[in-house]
Length: 370
Length: 221
Image (cartoon, rainbow over all chains, first blue to last red):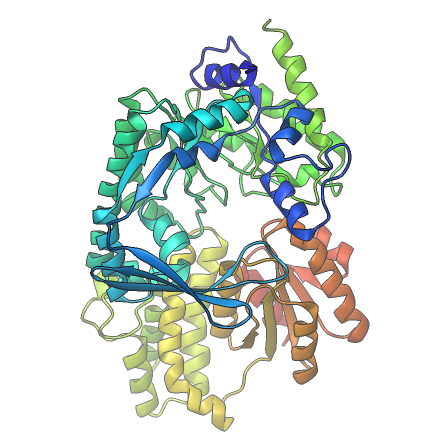
């Protein structure tokens, strides 16, 4: 196995790279959308799987596939059934010893994703079931899976995983949707906070497994957006939970970052209080709501930026010079605390060849440290 | 009378829907927008006055704070909930023609895009500013926009997109509707969009937040 990107990734985040940085563009959306639409990949990538595309592009990948090494084990009474309601809609029922939850989703020909018509939690009873599930779920490590992944894709980067979302973000994105989530937090706070407590204790059990594992790069896959996770909610719920998590993960020497891919200006003043080593996917102008200088000032000298190039710079709506200028400025401002990537991913309308241009700039920059 | 309308506006701005709502904690146990609106109607204040001097100022104030970055979507959602509680008492007056909407907005997230929160916030702010909003939801095809426009020919259209990949769909939708109905105003919004993009695709305007959109529309009516 060629360990070059594995080693470089590890060395960069643990500040052992002697100044070098790493280029890790995420191309999952580009790949998945092209496969979903039936368009297929353009030459020379035709017929390749995503890992072969990375090999062809000559760059590192952020290997969140290692998530699958951490298996959530539900209480033995929990089982799931699906019932088609019509050609497009499916009702999924989660049966448990203390009651059921139902989810209704709709397939659409326009997107690989499904529309949620009914969320997993839309009533007080369903929130009680969700709380009970968190109280009773445990986690297991899958060494065979880890070994297989290492053999297959380990040369592309260091093993990486993202933890399940914390309190508010879990409520918004996984359980209730934003609107119902907000109403629940403000109108039945005690019950929601019991759920948050059970969720955090469940995640503590996962951290015990993570800390005994060889996966050293841990992301909180939060998808934070300041418009929905307002500063008030951030300070009340997210920040203290994040600090507690970081402390536990740091005790085992892990690198910890979080995925903030929406508007972030209102939350940047708190970023150095989080305990995180870095922030992934902060999106600067013209796509996001902050400048690179504002990000630099907020992160200070100790925190890493992961990503940083607005995805729109890979589209032909922007000249390639804008991409080059942004890349050079990012390196100037953030190296060596930089895992360069795309905020948040190259889209299916993006020019994949622009990934090579950034790669050349990074390689040239890194050569001075050889 | 003015005091009652001021209190309604305050409850809407702060998101106090009714007596039973525990939010905001400082107003727990107090009457909310629902009770105060009923009291205003019972005391003979016209529905139009309640709408224009109670509900609209409340929603405008929270919308303005949102556009300045001083309020956030949870605040807007709670205000919209309070406004809806008040609106239940005004609905019969809309139905009878005592009060009229400023106009009709057909709203949707374009096909292939399933993001809804930005679009929903626009709906809430515009409803609070006196518009009738026909919310078509997410993943809305150009055919659905066109059909709804055929049934509501004097409407304006608001299109949302959060994905760069669906900006192309937005362009096609705008082109197709403009070909069929050149006089229809189409406005666009969403994180990756700009005024430049709006100009390029032939839309009538881009607004970065719902309040500036509402202000623009109000200036036209």
